[in-house]
Every structure is written in structure tokens, then in C-alpha cells.
Amino acid sequence: MPTFDAPDGTRLAYHRRGSGGDRPLVCVPGGPMMPSAYFGDLGGLAARQELVLLDLRGTGDSARPSDLAGFRVDRQAGDIEALRVAVGLERLDLLGHSASGDLVLAYAARYPERVRSLVLVCARARTAGIDFPVERRREALELRRGEPWYEEVRPAFERAVSGEADEADFTLLDRLSYGRWDTAAQEHAAACAEWFDEEAAGAYLAPGAFDGADAARAVLAELDAPVLVVSGALDGSPRPDSAAEVAGLFPHGEHVVQADAAHNPWVDGPDHFVRTVTEFLARDGR
Image (cartoon, rainbow, N blue to C red; front, side, top):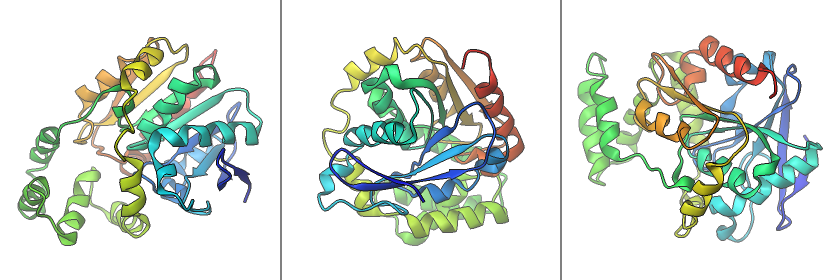
């Protein structure tokens, strides 16, 4: 397991998995603050593309800093730059999922010359001033009326919106993160629940994390790199039209909606997901 030092001296780990492609795809976990293990092999992507999977500080095999301030999303952009140096790449092909969209965009805004391409999977974009209102999640919930679990999940959702949800409610809400609540989804959700670190997640989104959104958006609007934004047709955060807005931030942005997928498209439809990402990375000039 290779390691490297972050700018503040925290020892971070990353994992190489798979082979293929002209260069590795660096994958940054969401959560926020989940270990890279939750990616698995990204639905089989590792069979066609070498992956470099970063364990964010305090997750997986990476050390936990004593100061929680170091978890704030904008302050972790330097960790990705240190990883780039450690793996010896001039520029990075970066994948960010969910909350790590904020981190990947923070990196791209600070080091635009180091970005070869971006793959944003059901990704947040608060770094650029785009947020996804909770009401949009209710829209996605209503798409699931035909599910046998809908009548049980709906009141749990309302309790969560009102701040009255308990652990059992959040466990029920896991169903909304997947296009099908099958064995693969249940196993993935259970692993994520075990790994989730509430303290680190809160520190990731500490006050001030997105104060530079206007400046970041201006840099991203000039980013000379192709950007693929993947959203799930059943996802509530983001809904596909919100993901299209994220793609519109970039001069070379494109948006693909994966049918029958929610927030974890490599779990819901691995073949479709792998094909979409590999075709994007394989294009000339990437």
C-alpha cells in the first residue's frame, strides 16, 4: 500500500487497482469522508482502466490528523496535489462522487493546469455555488411510488426533513440511493453505514468551506479540460436537470443520465457506467 505526506504532514494512503487505459484515473471518495473501499472496483471499471483510489485523511489506511480543521473540504485540495506529485503525473484524470464533487472542483479551481479531465458522478458542486435543495429529493422520492417500501420510507423522509429522524429512519432512506434495492445495493449500503464518520463529515463541511465559490466558478468557467457529468435518473441529489447545470459550468462539459440508477450508478448499472466512463476517457486528445 503506497503512502505519501499531505502538506500538513498527515500520512495518506492510496490504492492502485486494475489496469488499462493510457493513464490512471484518480478516484476521490464522497460520503463525505468515506474510505475509497466503498468504490469497490467501480462496477468493473478496474478491468478496463487503472484506478488510483485515494483514502481521504482519517479514512481507510490514511492517518487521522489531530486538528479537525484539516478535514474542511477546501483545505484538502492540497492533498490531491500531493497525490499527483507522489504518483508522478503531470496532469490528472479525476473522478469525484457525491460530496467529493466539492473537493474535486476545489482542486480544479486551485490547480486548473493540472487537470486533464474530470468525471463527476452524482456530484455536489457547492464549491462553485450550486446546491441541491431538499425539495428536489422529494421529487425523486415520488418517482419510487411503485416500490414495495415506498409507504415505509415516505414518513422517514419527512422526519429527516424536519430534523426528527433517528438511525432507523436513515437506514430506510438508504433505499433512495439505489435504483434497485437488491442484494448488491443492500451490501453496499451496509458497508457505507459502517464506514461513515459523522465527526469527519461535519468537519468537511465546516463554516467557510465554500466562501470562495464565486472565484472558483470563474476559474472553472475557463477550464480547458473535458468534463463528464453522470447523473442517475432516480437520484434526488442531484436531479438530472441540476446535474446538467453543473455540466454547464464548463466550456467542455457534457452530461449523461443513467436510466434506472440513483446515487450509486456503478452499483445500479455497472455495464452502462463502465461503458460511459471508458468511452469518455478513451477519446482522442484526452
